[in-house]
Every structure is written in C-alpha cells, then in structure tokens.
Image (tube, rainbow, N blue to C red; front, top):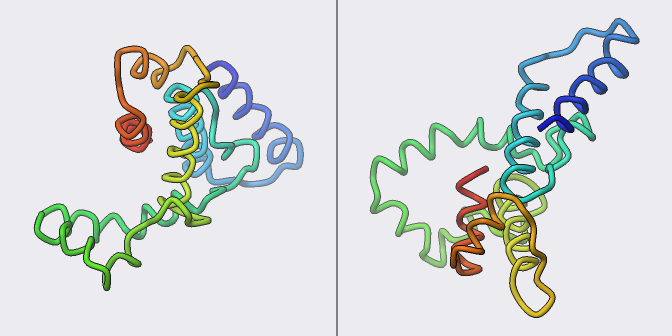
Length: 147
C-alpha cells in the first residue's frame, strides 16, 4: 500500500500542485483505491494512478450501470434472461476493451498465470486462495468480487 500512497502523492505533486492546477480529489481517491485493491488482490495495480485516468472506463461505466444493476439484482429471473442468445451481447465479455468486460479479461488472464505448468506463485490474496485449493474458475470469480 505504501507504493500506492507514494504514487498518489507523486501524481498530485507533479501534475497538479506543482502547476497550481485544480483537481477532483474524489476521482483521484477512486483511482487510488482501485489500484490498492487490485495490488492487494493479485499483486499488481490496474494503473489508474500511473495513467491519471479511468484506464478501462471502469469507474464511468460502473457509475452509469449501478441503477440498472440494482434493478436486475432485485429480480433474479432477469439474470437468467441475459444468458439468452438475443440478450447475451448486452452482458460484459472478457473480450471487451473497456469497462467490466475488460476487467473480466484481466481477471481471466491473471488467474491463468496462477495455474498450469508454469504457474506463478505470489504472496497476495489470490495466491492465498489458490494455495488453499481454489480452482482457476473460482479464482477468476474471486478477482472480480474483490474489485
């Protein structure tokens, strides 16, 4: 976490304070927390602070989709409807370039690194879960849950 605190301080000092520029600390705090969570969860930040942006439009899309997600969660039958071929394109996919789908792709790739013949062993939350018997599919789901 120290690394991410330093990254936040460096970002604010170098891009804003040094140039006497106004910034939205709420957004910077979101970048910071997302990078901290991803570092703790699977050993590397998503890079929001380094880019000083919502790199995968994750925050923007989540904010816009939150009301719909709440509505769908209220009616569990709707979740099953999104598995129908006609509605499947409305659901995020790991092949997406932005948003939740992009993070799903990162989760899939990160989990894959921890399994197989050349598996990476790392001391983070995901490494702890894998050491305790999580399957690759469960590891993907756990990454998404953490984020």
